[in-house]
Amino acid sequence: MLQSQAALAKKSAGRAALVKTAAPSTSLKNAWCPQYFPFSGRHNETSSNGSMDISNYDEDEDDDRVTLDEASLLNKLIRKSLVESSHNVEILQRDPRSPLFSVKTFEELHLKPELLNGVYAMGFNRPSKIQETALPMILADPPENLIAQSQSGTGKTAAFVLAMLSRVNPKERFPQCLCVAPTYELALQIGRVVEKMGQFCDNIKVTYAVRGNRLVRGSVVEEQIVIGTPGSLLDWCFKLKFMDVRKIKVFVLDEADVLMSKQNFSDQSVRIQRALSEDCQMLLFSATFEEPVLQFAKRIVPDPNIIKLRREELTLDNIRQYYFQCENIEDKYRALCNIYGSITIGQAMIFCQTRKNASWLYWSLTKDGHQVSLLSGELSVENRANVIQNFRDGKDKVLISTNVCARGIDVKQVTIVVNFSLPTRGLHHADFETYLHRIGRTGRFGKKGIAFNMVEKQNLPLLFSIQEHFKIVIKRLDPEDIEALENTED
Ligand SMILES: Nc1ncnc2c1ncn2[C@@H]1O[C@H](COP(=O)(O)OP(=O)(O)OP(=O)(O)O)[C@@H](O)[C@H]1O
Image (cartoon, rainbow, N blue to C red):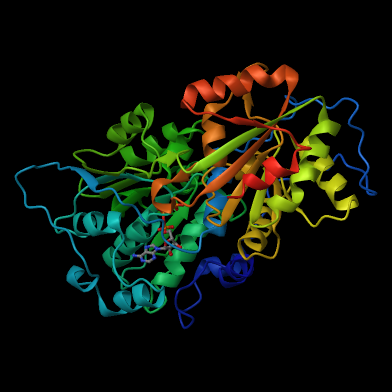
């Protein structure tokens, strides 16, 4: 995956052309090359010899949460395939009397042959669940507006990229599709899909309105597809007048929920949308659909069809849960070492609440001769993707993680989870959602699993509140009682 990131930077050099034979555009003179910037320059607090002062160890300090856009990018980097869903798509049609089409094959969409080839070259055999309904709406003539919500990985990007590529007239050398993304990196990810799916489309070009891609004043953008972040797009459209917004045929807002989490982005997007022509098709996508996102979506997309795909529910039903009562962090460590033999039978994830805590545990286990890997927010998103990939490939058996890994990332083969610290919100409240995300499985991947919780005496009320919240029993185990421990493996 990381290799393809590098390929992206290389392939997208200059203003990425889908055709190698295209006459150099004015913009190529700028030789702007999109680079992949890791997010984080944060430092590891552990010294090079691995020792770490845990005297001021504090469970609640330095909680390692990630922003929505980081999580979204990480998901994209590690995703290899479609996230399937067992739910049906819910549809709210703009005109309930008009017939509703759904397709089971890409052929039924009557795509241009070069585009169909591109779809097959991506390895897509049939439309995903959301694409079955979204694609006929998106490709309808006259075009229809759409708001679509489904969890990450269900095929939204592929759907709107297909729409953009099929609506472009390659003979016309001006922007015809505008796609708004929340960050530079996410914009490049979309561009990568455009390049791949459009690899057989002659004379269609894509460019990026993002920080770092500065055009000379007076330039005129000739690429038909422009992907960018709201601020830069606003400048390109109005301040610098590089393009004529009135000529845009398709306007896409991707990851609306992430866009909304960023200051000014919703207003900037609305300002662009207001300048579009009346017959411009508007498409908005989001992984979540809380009320403010829906309100924003309705504000920006007039007369929309709305489709939603419910996410698979997480459940604790198949998970046997245990706890060890411990005195302090050293005691927790001893308990962990006692069960280490059992947890390494399968693949295990050990969760800590803080980065400091995770580093300490990583170095302690490493010093004691155990092979473990570490995933935490101080790594760049690229490095995180690497660590997850090695773990998925089975190269590493035990992964220590902070919350960065708890969400959305589905490592299906994990059968054992250790909460080295219980997830908390503030000082005294258990974080039920994070507990569920760390341990829960979707019903369909209902493999059996085991969860061990290491709990200091003063934190027992947190454990009890988790039991009460989920109406479950978490059984106490004695870390010295080998027999009881072995029975957990039955
Ligand atoms: N019809 C399909 N058949 C097989 N794979 C597909 C299909 N559509 C998309 N995919 C693949 O599934 C993965 C997820 O698709 P995509 O990125 O379009 O989902 P998404 O809903 O946009 O996710 P995100 O919100 O994270 O961007 C990608 O690897 C993509 O190549």
